[in-house]
Image (cartoon, rainbow, N blue to C red):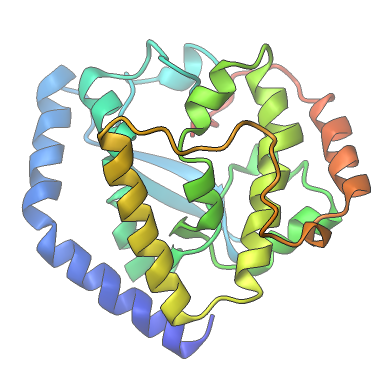
Amino acid sequence: MTRGKRAFDLIGAGLGVVLLAPLLALLGLLVKAEDGGPVLFRQERVGYRGRRFRIWKFRTMVPDAELRGLPLTVGRDPRVTRIGAWMRRLKLDELPQLFNVLVGDMSLVGPRPDVPRYVALYRAPERRVLELVPGMTDEASIRYLGESAMLAASPDPERNYLAEIAPEKIRLSLAYAARATVWSDLGVILKTLRHLYWSAAGIQLTAPLGRADPAVDSRSTPRSDRGRSAASAATIPRTNQNCLR
């Protein structure tokens, strides 16, 4: 990470925490009031160069949700609380990650960090994403803003995520990182906010599942390696580990 990007992250995250403090407090109260459970959800993710860290989110699901269904959240998951569904739609549950940015685990803009179970299945080209500092949003996050609904249309959501969505998101993230600047990061943040506004208004902007973005160089992840990712997905054990996303 360059000094300019780190300075941008510190300023942006610091301002975000200060300006959004009342909203953060309100969201915490709403989560607590709904069912009396924990306000925050912590989960182990894989970050820069494979280093593991704890990511922070507002809790959006019932306590011990990882023991009650699929590791992925798909469609209208009954484990998601009423307040949680609203926060997820607007990505408000991700706001505590501003603190992950402040301590250096994450960046404002970068590939979303995955859980160890899924990272272990990455092929060599996909593992290049671990050379990037993970972030709260990026071009891939915007493109797959409706990922949960997209997975709901699949007969095997976890396999679909590993064979199709994860490799494509990594490809998009690597392509963006190759040309990223502080100014382009600012553009991604503004674009994310715009898409979230449109999402709140009920406008569907997410491209169909598995459809490639022609604006991104497809050489970022060769087709042969994407095929091997699909083969890896076929070997996934169907167990409910703590992989809720």
